[in-house]
Length: 222
Image: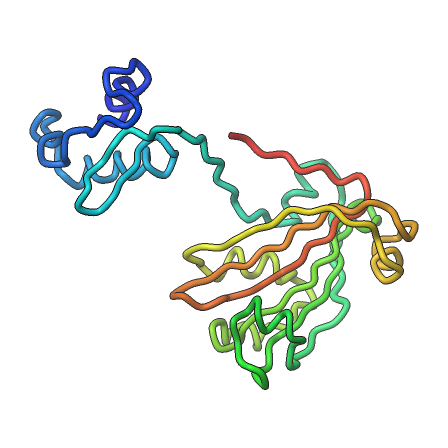
């Protein structure tokens, strides 16, 4: 059913901006349950091909946008997939009151303490990524029972803590003296940075800055 809707969009049988039949009509036409129709239309809307508005119905998108979905990678898997030896080192693990900018990102109150972890991921003995992470123990109390000496917070969270949504920012910066020392590079070298927050039930689980050593390249598929 989804393939047929896609065919009608691509063939311009349903033109950009056109309203399409409602779920009940499509259910009768294709002889399937409304839940099946709903799921198919939702998938196409998430792909940017349909505009769905409550009470206004569903229309073919005027300006279709192909959307890329990004998974949260386990850094160990990323390194091992390149055929490199992975090693992890915990730099610090503290429960502290965060600075003002982190309070804003984590949407907590002044005086609330968060779990702060700094760690280094290495590939073939060389620095690969510096993980600077904050976790809200009120949202993830189990994190307080983990020492993160052996397993990185990146991997533990991906494996154990489901999330509903998140936001991610990619940027580039030049290394300061602290980052240069951690990543074993010259001060002023270019670094690739990922800032990411994830949430569940409207509450921030974690906010992390991943700073990658010079030469890092990110690859994804559309």
